[in-house]
Length: 115
Image 1: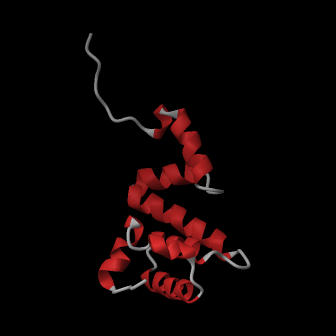
Image 2: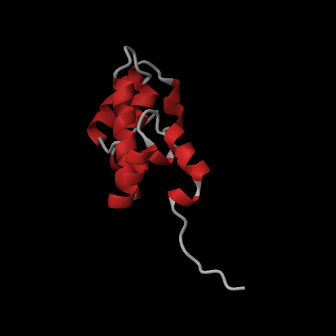
Image 3: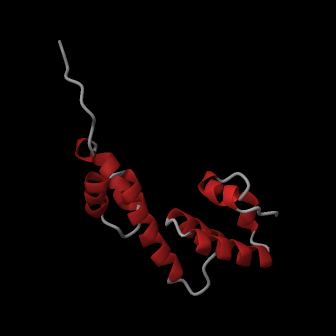
């Protein structure tokens, strides 16, 4: 028996659709799916990152490491660096991950940061 090969979509995998809906905290899976289909993975990831950043900024005292992660995911390099500098001043424990966290490779490669 011959089975045609094709790429699976989110509609083919309801469990994945639900997982995405839960993991993107408040942003509906339909929004993510639409953005992904229309503009691709990077655009959908940026949409999620921007939404996450807005949620973190609403907190009265956001964790500096969480905030830096949100800024870097949203592509906001200068804000990322300012937040990392503030985190360094208060000895933010998350900064220990900075040397190995792949999300920060673009930041590490463009500015020397010594911890």
